[in-house]
Image (tube, rainbow, N blue to C red; front, side, top):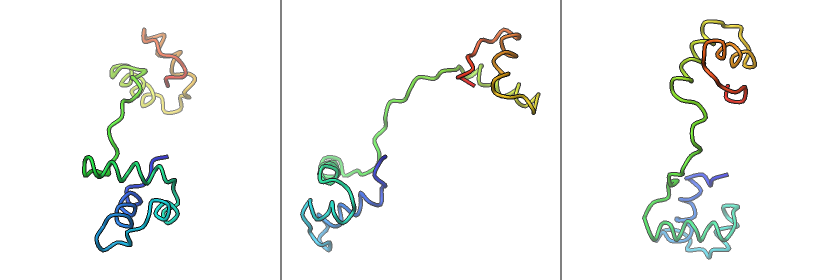
Length: 103
């Protein structure tokens, strides 16, 4: 689980800010309830980039196309009581192949 942004700023304040307590890595880790390596990571990150936000990550490729998503959505709107297991079968009859796990 990512460290919340406010905790990252606490690390900076407790360790490096002129009006902060100037605590050691160990004391900061204890104060914010994280590991020493996490404290070091965020302090190094701040030193290098002056940025404590999450970096962008590559995501998993899409399992369905935009067109398939639109067809799934429109089918679900047409038939308000359709269950997820029935959607692939109904789409298959319309010429759209999607697996049950995609819905």
